[in-house]
Image (cartoon, rainbow, N blue to C red):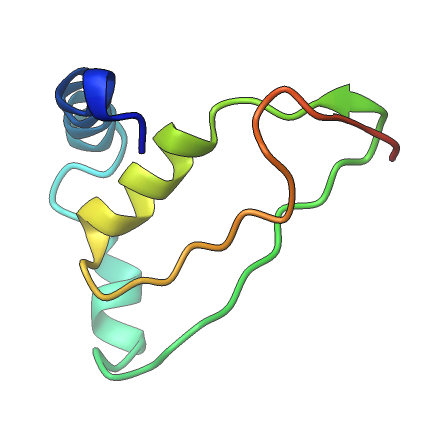
Length: 81
């Protein structure tokens, strides 16, 4: 995460999560045991420029401090679909 802006990024992430997630998803809390682990991959369907990875990493870590977030390319990289 960019050091100079980490507090701004975390503040934005906290606000977004508060608005979008609120107290969490009740269905997930009822049906998915807390110990379940998941893995995800963000895939581009169209050519694009990768941006916002600091925000994505901060959002995942805000939800679970033990999360591992790997960047396959740096922000600003033009990628194919």
